[in-house]
Length: 183
Image (tube, rainbow, N blue to C red; front, side, top):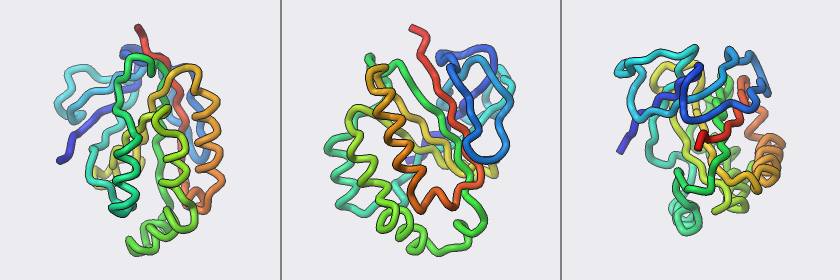
């Protein structure tokens, strides 16, 4: 089942932007806050400086065994202690998309060990992947992470490992937006 989300960057929202850095490629216009809305941008009544859209969907690169492992240790979003978040929009290059699904899977898992790396940081770091490419958006994926303040260094270590993998050689644009929840 697909759930459509809009990440509205502007001057309003439940999440305060603490940093916004272009890791690769062009930056997004700086904003003060982000509101996460469970609906398409077309249905929003208020507009922000920018809106990024994506939808949750089935897991596309993990096999059954990996999915079972993830589900056994992963906790959901919106945990009361998870007052830190990161929104990381990513766009892969044309070479990535010209490969077949099994070639991308090989790079994603067999060479980069994406799921294995992620498992090492669960349950402390919760995450949700949003697909944007099929919507014609400027990014292919929007990854949303939530964690407690004491796990910020752990989150940085997760990103360091992922960005050092072969998979990240195919990233042509990535923005790292860090957030604190208004409580």
